[in-house]
Length: 375
Image (cartoon, rainbow, N blue to C red; front, top):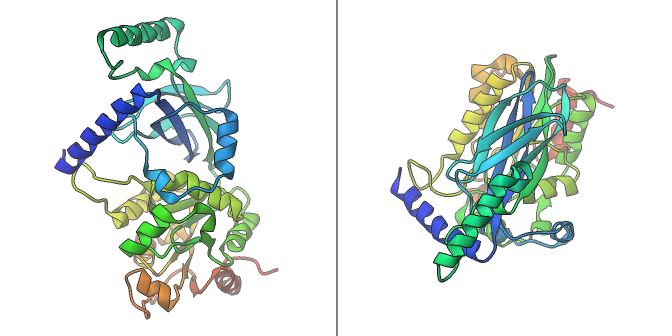
């Protein structure tokens, strides 16, 4: 394991022990997932947090949240998570989180196409009374032996469940939408470090601005393609997933799973490779969902045109069209490029490859190219 990862684990372990002494416990966070015939991809995370009532959750939805709060989290590594897929009579299984507290597992289950509920539970809700009683006794014994209280309270003493949805794609061929997030659906002006830090850590989440016309473009795509899977692919951290989900809902974008990455050191280095994350995610979707032909949407401020061109060259039959939003000259400079950045469109693209300043222009170009039906 890389030294950076060992340092991070040590710090999180110290903070975690202190938080447990203050009454924090494991909380399950379920993220939207997707699946196909015979399987679903379950996404989630287990974090330490205080007990919350339903009123607390509602207040959190209404409260303005500064971005830095999303990163003040302590994951629970190797936590036992009970998973229920498809309602009370659905499939049940047990998974464990990785060192960052994440769940990202494929579960074999036969579900009809469409949305289905996934519930993740940590704690006594899914355990027998004998195990809970033994855990409580262990805590009592630890408190008796430790002047300051137990150093580590077992996670199963206090239970918590988190629910989300998985979208299952049927066997029939279908058009899907895969979209970048930063500067494609929301104006973020990444990755210039100072601007990125401001938008990610300081900016009030309700002050984030949607890209003009993109929500209308995406709603037109889903209206013309019933049952189309919608996925959002970004190099952003999972810490901002709740913020992004609320933003997408508030600004009228179609709901869909977020494919994000972890924030912080890895087993091999200090930082993660954003391009590798996107490239790997594209390859995985092509492998897992061979029945889907994708509409790819991104911007020319980072690596989207190059990555989409690579994917198109490798699997042209899996792409129906590409749309690249052109950043303004000011946005290009803030994004670390230059004012005349190219969209890297292949000279002989086998599918319509369009560019525009906003979603309305892209929609118009796809109308003209026959990708979408003009009203």
